[in-house]
Every structure is written in structure tokens, then in C-alpha cells.
Amino acid sequence: MNTLINWFELPVQQLDRAVAFYEYVLGAEFRRETIGDTDMAVFPHIKPATGGALVKGAMFQPTSGGTIIYLATADIVAALARVDEKGGECCFGPHELPNGIGTIALITDSEGNRVGLHQPA
Image (tube, rainbow, N blue to C red; front, side):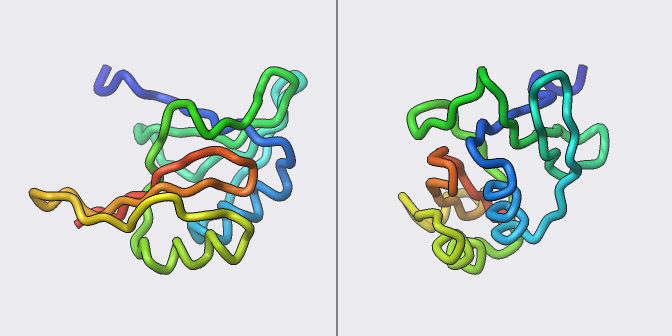
């Protein structure tokens, strides 16, 4: 195993709205899947990179108080402007980290999840 983190899921209440939000903010295209009674939109990734999905189902509830994942962006300032345009909100940042780590911000997405954005240095 090269990493202990191999998948993440962001709960959503309205999958179409969440997909529109993240496709617009990140400039990414999602792949739709249904597994059992869970509808998913998979974040683009190339294996062996960590993958993840937006998920809608009975056992998934968006929250602003849980684990925070950081999604990569090439231009954090532009991404933050798009967050506001799609009904999200910037909660923190952008903040430049020391030692060439890059710049981060925290947002609340269209579903109420708190999510981090990271622009590598």
C-alpha cells in the first residue's frame, strides 16, 4: 500500500446541484454511477491517485462539522469567485502556508459541507 487514503465521499442532498457546483468551481467533469440505492458523481482521477465521489443516499447527510478534505485547484482566487457565484461561501482564506506548501481556503459548498481548497505552490 502506498497510501492509507484510497477513497472519499462527500454527502449531498441534490446531486445535480452539487455536480453543477463542483464542475463550475473546479472546472472538472464528473462520471455518474449508481451503486445499490446510492447515486454518485465520481471526481476525475487517474489511478493510483486517490478517488472520491459526491454521494446521495439515505445514509449520507451533508455537514459543516465533520472531516475536511482539500481539493486541488490551479487558481484558488478564481475558484473562490466561482464558489460565490454557485451559492457556496468562503469561510476562510485564501491563506498562504509556509515552506512552499501552497495556498488554502475553506468553503461551504452548495450542500452545506465544509470543504478545503488547495493551490499547490
